[in-house]
Amino acid sequence: MKKINVKGPIISNDDKWIYDMLEMDSTAPKDVIDALPDDGSDIEVDINSGGGLVTAGSEIYTALMNYSGKVTVNIMGMAASAASVIAMAGNPTRISPVGQIMIHNSAAGVYGDYHDQDKLSDMLKQLNEAMANAYQLKTKLPMDDLLAKMDSETYLNADQAKELGFVDEVMFTDDKIQLVADGGSGLLPQTAIDKIAELVKPAPDLSDTDIDRISNAVVQKLNIQPTKQAENKFVDPFAF
Image 1 (cartoon, rainbow, N blue to C red):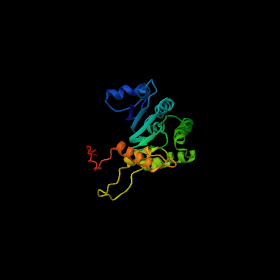
Image 2 (image 1 turned 180 degrees about the vertical axis):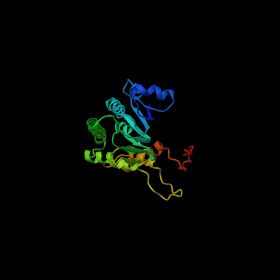
Image 3 (image 1 turned 90 degrees about the vertical axis):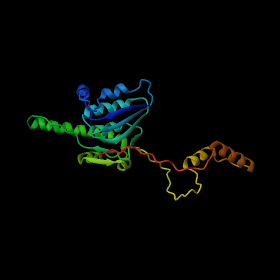
Image 4 (image 1 turned 60 degrees about the vertical axis):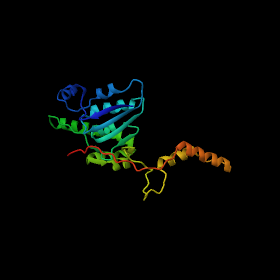
């Protein structure tokens, strides 16, 4: 499965060469659009961005929404502002347990008299509503609620983002994990239970012979052996 990175500020295509020259992470619409496979195969989009240009973020969001293949979005760290709009294109959208989403109002500055300032204010309000459309399509939350969250600049951790519908799942979690006090009691691992449930489906009027035959088939299929505790895995810590 092809991975596409959305890292650093979301910028225009015209400015991309400057960031590349300075060896700075950045993402322009062309980076994503050119990376989309021609065959419509599934892709994963990894996001860690504080946002940037609304227009560039909107173009990337639209390109991903229009893509014919499955788009899985992984929020690896931060998906803020324009990057949070891009994250809404995932089906599913997933977030790291330490990831965050931030939504807020659009911002810009203009030199001019009060007429110019009024026009800018109206334009920014329209941009806010445009961004909120992407949030609403994903979360199904009322528009007024979304605009209020944007107005107060809202940060969401992984659990909050899932609860509100901004993401579909939190990465590295398993809904079937059970809390047990097990000192080698011989409990089957959940994966074995799932395999048995798949192999043995309810059937009416099974004879003892049928049950024995199915049981033997399950044992042979699973090749069940004593379970051993998983080894600890270590990764390099991130210093901050």
